[in-house]
Length: 275
Image 1 (tube, rainbow, N blue to C red):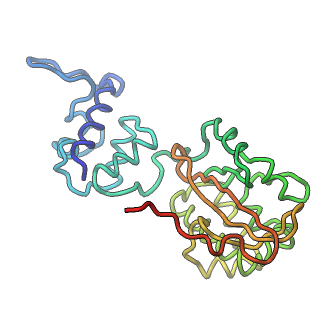
Image 2 (image 1 turned 90 degrees about the vertical axis):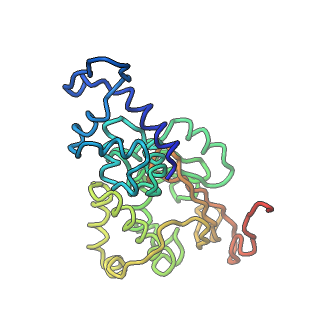
Image 3 (image 1 turned 135 degrees about the horizontal axis):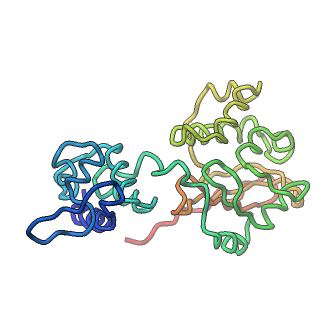
Protein backbone atom coordinates (compact mmCIF):
# COMPACT_ATOMS: atom_id res chain seq x y z
CA UNK A 1 0.00 0.00 0.00
CA UNK A 2 1.14 3.52 -0.82
CA UNK A 3 -0.65 5.61 1.81
CA UNK A 4 0.73 8.94 0.60
CA UNK A 5 -0.32 8.41 -3.01
CA UNK A 6 -3.68 6.95 -1.99
CA UNK A 7 -4.52 9.87 0.29
CA UNK A 8 -3.47 12.49 -2.28
CA UNK A 9 -5.45 10.90 -5.12
CA UNK A 10 -8.65 10.42 -3.10
CA UNK A 11 -8.60 13.83 -1.43
CA UNK A 12 -8.02 15.62 -4.71
CA UNK A 13 -10.82 13.84 -6.53
CA UNK A 14 -13.28 13.91 -3.62
CA UNK A 15 -12.90 17.69 -3.47
CA UNK A 16 -14.14 17.97 -7.07
CA UNK A 17 -17.50 16.27 -6.40
CA UNK A 18 -20.31 18.67 -5.45
CA UNK A 19 -22.70 17.16 -2.86
CA UNK A 20 -25.61 18.93 -4.60
CA UNK A 21 -24.98 16.84 -7.72
CA UNK A 22 -26.01 13.79 -5.70
CA UNK A 23 -28.97 15.35 -3.91
CA UNK A 24 -26.99 16.09 -0.76
CA UNK A 25 -26.42 19.38 1.03
CA UNK A 26 -23.09 20.90 1.86
CA UNK A 27 -22.25 20.49 5.56
CA UNK A 28 -22.86 23.61 7.67
CA UNK A 29 -21.73 24.70 11.10
CA UNK A 30 -18.61 26.00 12.70
CA UNK A 31 -15.13 25.22 11.52
CA UNK A 32 -13.45 25.09 8.14
CA UNK A 33 -15.27 22.92 5.61
CA UNK A 34 -13.34 21.25 2.80
CA UNK A 35 -14.63 21.42 -0.74
CA UNK A 36 -16.55 18.52 -2.23
CA UNK A 37 -18.12 15.51 -0.60
CA UNK A 38 -17.54 14.78 3.05
CA UNK A 39 -16.20 11.39 4.01
CA UNK A 40 -19.54 10.53 5.61
CA UNK A 41 -21.32 11.41 2.37
CA UNK A 42 -19.09 9.02 0.47
CA UNK A 43 -20.14 6.26 2.89
CA UNK A 44 -23.77 7.19 2.30
CA UNK A 45 -23.48 7.20 -1.49
CA UNK A 46 -21.61 3.88 -1.57
CA UNK A 47 -23.97 2.28 0.99
CA UNK A 48 -21.14 1.44 3.37
CA UNK A 49 -20.82 1.54 7.13
CA UNK A 50 -19.74 4.78 8.78
CA UNK A 51 -15.95 5.26 8.71
CA UNK A 52 -15.41 2.89 5.77
CA UNK A 53 -14.23 5.63 3.45
CA UNK A 54 -12.14 7.30 6.14
CA UNK A 55 -10.29 4.03 6.62
CA UNK A 56 -9.63 3.87 2.88
CA UNK A 57 -8.43 7.45 2.50
CA UNK A 58 -6.16 7.27 5.53
CA UNK A 59 -4.69 3.92 4.54
CA UNK A 60 -6.18 1.95 7.44
CA UNK A 61 -8.31 -0.26 5.18
CA UNK A 62 -5.94 -3.09 4.32
CA UNK A 63 -6.74 -5.07 1.16
CA UNK A 64 -10.03 -3.31 0.32
CA UNK A 65 -12.22 -5.33 -2.07
CA UNK A 66 -12.08 -4.40 -5.74
CA UNK A 67 -15.84 -3.84 -5.92
CA UNK A 68 -15.61 -1.13 -3.24
CA UNK A 69 -12.69 0.56 -4.98
CA UNK A 70 -14.71 0.47 -8.21
CA UNK A 71 -17.64 2.19 -6.44
CA UNK A 72 -15.39 4.95 -5.18
CA UNK A 73 -13.63 5.33 -8.53
CA UNK A 74 -16.90 5.73 -10.41
CA UNK A 75 -18.30 8.10 -7.82
CA UNK A 76 -15.20 10.28 -8.12
CA UNK A 77 -15.15 10.10 -11.93
CA UNK A 78 -11.70 8.56 -12.22
CA UNK A 79 -10.32 7.75 -15.63
CA UNK A 80 -8.70 4.42 -16.46
CA UNK A 81 -5.19 5.53 -15.57
CA UNK A 82 -6.36 6.86 -12.21
CA UNK A 83 -8.27 3.61 -11.65
CA UNK A 84 -5.04 1.67 -12.07
CA UNK A 85 -3.29 4.04 -9.66
CA UNK A 86 -6.06 3.68 -7.09
CA UNK A 87 -5.83 -0.11 -7.09
CA UNK A 88 -2.06 -0.08 -6.87
CA UNK A 89 -1.97 2.54 -4.13
CA UNK A 90 -4.58 0.57 -2.17
CA UNK A 91 -2.37 -2.50 -2.28
CA UNK A 92 -4.39 -4.87 -4.48
CA UNK A 93 -2.18 -4.60 -7.57
CA UNK A 94 -3.52 -4.00 -11.06
CA UNK A 95 -7.32 -3.81 -11.31
CA UNK A 96 -9.23 -6.97 -12.22
CA UNK A 97 -10.80 -5.25 -15.23
CA UNK A 98 -11.55 -1.86 -16.78
CA UNK A 99 -13.44 0.73 -14.78
CA UNK A 100 -16.14 1.23 -17.40
CA UNK A 101 -17.52 -1.29 -19.94
CA UNK A 102 -16.86 1.20 -22.75
CA UNK A 103 -13.18 1.54 -21.86
CA UNK A 104 -10.70 0.08 -24.30
CA UNK A 105 -12.76 0.92 -27.38
CA UNK A 106 -10.90 4.04 -28.48
CA UNK A 107 -7.38 5.46 -28.51
CA UNK A 108 -6.12 9.01 -29.14
CA UNK A 109 -6.06 9.82 -32.86
CA UNK A 110 -2.34 10.55 -32.81
CA UNK A 111 -1.77 6.79 -32.68
CA UNK A 112 -2.50 6.59 -36.42
CA UNK A 113 0.41 8.94 -37.12
CA UNK A 114 2.59 6.90 -34.75
CA UNK A 115 1.70 3.64 -36.49
CA UNK A 116 2.33 5.20 -39.91
CA UNK A 117 5.86 6.00 -38.77
CA UNK A 118 6.73 2.39 -37.96
CA UNK A 119 8.81 0.65 -40.64
CA UNK A 120 7.41 -2.82 -39.93
CA UNK A 121 3.86 -4.14 -40.15
CA UNK A 122 1.95 -2.46 -37.32
CA UNK A 123 -1.63 -2.08 -36.18
CA UNK A 124 -3.78 -1.21 -33.17
CA UNK A 125 -6.97 -2.99 -32.13
CA UNK A 126 -9.46 -2.12 -29.42
CA UNK A 127 -10.47 -4.46 -26.57
CA UNK A 128 -12.81 -6.30 -28.95
CA UNK A 129 -10.03 -6.77 -31.54
CA UNK A 130 -11.65 -4.24 -33.90
CA UNK A 131 -9.00 -2.57 -36.04
CA UNK A 132 -8.48 1.07 -35.05
CA UNK A 133 -5.29 1.98 -36.90
CA UNK A 134 -2.77 0.29 -39.20
CA UNK A 135 0.01 1.18 -41.59
CA UNK A 136 0.52 0.38 -45.26
CA UNK A 137 3.01 -2.38 -44.44
CA UNK A 138 0.30 -4.25 -42.56
CA UNK A 139 -2.26 -3.86 -45.34
CA UNK A 140 0.26 -5.17 -47.87
CA UNK A 141 0.30 -8.53 -46.09
CA UNK A 142 -3.20 -9.36 -47.41
CA UNK A 143 -3.84 -10.64 -50.93
CA UNK A 144 -6.31 -7.82 -51.68
CA UNK A 145 -4.35 -5.17 -49.76
CA UNK A 146 -7.26 -4.65 -47.36
CA UNK A 147 -6.85 -5.21 -43.63
CA UNK A 148 -9.77 -6.95 -41.84
CA UNK A 149 -12.22 -5.08 -39.64
CA UNK A 150 -11.63 -7.47 -36.71
CA UNK A 151 -8.29 -9.24 -36.46
CA UNK A 152 -9.44 -11.90 -33.98
CA UNK A 153 -12.30 -12.99 -36.23
CA UNK A 154 -9.99 -12.96 -39.26
CA UNK A 155 -7.25 -15.04 -37.59
CA UNK A 156 -9.69 -17.66 -36.34
CA UNK A 157 -12.49 -17.82 -38.89
CA UNK A 158 -11.40 -16.39 -42.24
CA UNK A 159 -10.75 -19.15 -44.77
CA UNK A 160 -7.89 -17.34 -46.55
CA UNK A 161 -6.17 -16.79 -43.19
CA UNK A 162 -6.40 -20.51 -42.41
CA UNK A 163 -5.42 -21.80 -45.83
CA UNK A 164 -2.86 -19.27 -47.02
CA UNK A 165 -1.64 -16.46 -44.78
CA UNK A 166 -1.25 -18.08 -41.36
CA UNK A 167 1.07 -20.99 -42.13
CA UNK A 168 0.49 -24.07 -39.94
CA UNK A 169 -2.73 -22.44 -38.74
CA UNK A 170 -4.12 -25.49 -36.96
CA UNK A 171 -0.98 -26.39 -35.00
CA UNK A 172 0.76 -23.02 -34.53
CA UNK A 173 -1.69 -20.14 -34.77
CA UNK A 174 -5.09 -21.31 -33.54
CA UNK A 175 -3.91 -22.94 -30.27
CA UNK A 176 -2.16 -19.69 -29.32
CA UNK A 177 -4.98 -17.34 -30.37
CA UNK A 178 -7.90 -19.06 -28.64
CA UNK A 179 -6.55 -18.53 -25.10
CA UNK A 180 -6.34 -14.80 -25.85
CA UNK A 181 -10.05 -14.80 -26.66
CA UNK A 182 -10.81 -16.74 -23.47
CA UNK A 183 -8.75 -14.32 -21.35
CA UNK A 184 -10.46 -11.29 -22.92
CA UNK A 185 -13.89 -12.74 -22.16
CA UNK A 186 -12.90 -13.30 -18.54
CA UNK A 187 -12.28 -9.54 -18.22
CA UNK A 188 -15.11 -8.37 -20.49
CA UNK A 189 -17.84 -11.01 -20.21
CA UNK A 190 -20.54 -8.70 -21.61
CA UNK A 191 -18.62 -7.74 -24.75
CA UNK A 192 -21.01 -8.47 -27.63
CA UNK A 193 -18.31 -8.69 -30.29
CA UNK A 194 -16.22 -11.17 -28.31
CA UNK A 195 -19.28 -13.26 -27.45
CA UNK A 196 -20.24 -13.43 -31.11
CA UNK A 197 -16.75 -14.64 -32.03
CA UNK A 198 -16.91 -17.20 -29.23
CA UNK A 199 -20.20 -18.55 -30.58
CA UNK A 200 -18.70 -18.93 -34.06
CA UNK A 201 -15.64 -20.64 -32.59
CA UNK A 202 -17.72 -23.13 -30.63
CA UNK A 203 -19.74 -23.99 -33.74
CA UNK A 204 -16.66 -24.45 -35.93
CA UNK A 205 -15.68 -28.13 -36.40
CA UNK A 206 -11.94 -27.32 -36.29
CA UNK A 207 -11.97 -24.73 -33.52
CA UNK A 208 -14.60 -26.23 -31.23
CA UNK A 209 -12.38 -29.03 -29.87
CA UNK A 210 -9.42 -26.66 -29.50
CA UNK A 211 -11.64 -24.24 -27.57
CA UNK A 212 -12.73 -26.94 -25.15
CA UNK A 213 -9.12 -27.99 -24.64
CA UNK A 214 -8.29 -24.58 -23.18
CA UNK A 215 -4.77 -23.13 -23.03
CA UNK A 216 -2.78 -20.55 -21.13
CA UNK A 217 -1.07 -18.49 -23.84
CA UNK A 218 -2.66 -15.08 -23.35
CA UNK A 219 -0.44 -12.69 -25.34
CA UNK A 220 1.84 -12.98 -28.39
CA UNK A 221 4.69 -10.71 -27.24
CA UNK A 222 7.97 -12.22 -28.43
CA UNK A 223 6.36 -15.07 -30.38
CA UNK A 224 7.72 -16.19 -33.74
CA UNK A 225 5.29 -17.74 -36.19
CA UNK A 226 5.32 -18.79 -39.87
CA UNK A 227 3.40 -16.50 -42.21
CA UNK A 228 2.82 -16.13 -45.94
CA UNK A 229 3.04 -12.48 -46.98
CA UNK A 230 1.05 -11.61 -50.11
CA UNK A 231 3.99 -9.71 -51.63
CA UNK A 232 7.07 -11.11 -49.89
CA UNK A 233 6.22 -14.79 -49.82
CA UNK A 234 6.59 -17.26 -46.99
CA UNK A 235 8.67 -16.42 -43.94
CA UNK A 236 8.44 -15.87 -40.21
CA UNK A 237 7.19 -12.95 -38.16
CA UNK A 238 8.40 -11.92 -34.74
CA UNK A 239 5.54 -10.32 -32.83
CA UNK A 240 6.00 -7.39 -30.46
CA UNK A 241 2.91 -6.52 -28.41
CA UNK A 242 2.17 -3.49 -26.23
CA UNK A 243 -0.86 -1.58 -24.96
CA UNK A 244 -1.85 2.10 -25.29
CA UNK A 245 -2.25 3.05 -21.63
CA UNK A 246 -5.45 5.03 -22.08
CA UNK A 247 -7.35 2.02 -23.43
CA UNK A 248 -7.29 -1.15 -21.27
CA UNK A 249 -7.51 -4.24 -23.41
CA UNK A 250 -6.39 -2.52 -26.59
CA UNK A 251 -3.13 -3.63 -28.17
CA UNK A 252 -0.38 -2.35 -30.42
CA UNK A 253 1.08 -5.15 -32.52
CA UNK A 254 4.30 -4.82 -34.51
CA UNK A 255 5.30 -7.74 -36.75
CA UNK A 256 8.87 -8.08 -37.99
CA UNK A 257 8.88 -10.21 -41.13
CA UNK A 258 11.84 -12.19 -42.43
CA UNK A 259 11.52 -14.31 -45.60
CA UNK A 260 12.54 -17.94 -45.77
CA UNK A 261 12.23 -20.92 -43.49
CA UNK A 262 14.67 -19.79 -40.82
CA UNK A 263 13.00 -18.01 -37.93
CA UNK A 264 13.36 -14.27 -37.80
CA UNK A 265 15.18 -13.67 -34.52
CA UNK A 266 16.01 -17.04 -33.01
CA UNK A 267 19.33 -15.77 -31.63
CA UNK A 268 18.24 -12.33 -30.52
CA UNK A 269 19.22 -11.88 -26.84
CA UNK A 270 16.99 -10.40 -24.16
CA UNK A 271 17.43 -6.68 -23.50
CA UNK A 272 18.39 -5.80 -19.95
CA UNK A 273 19.93 -2.71 -18.39
CA UNK A 274 23.35 -3.10 -16.81
CA UNK A 275 23.20 -3.18 -12.98
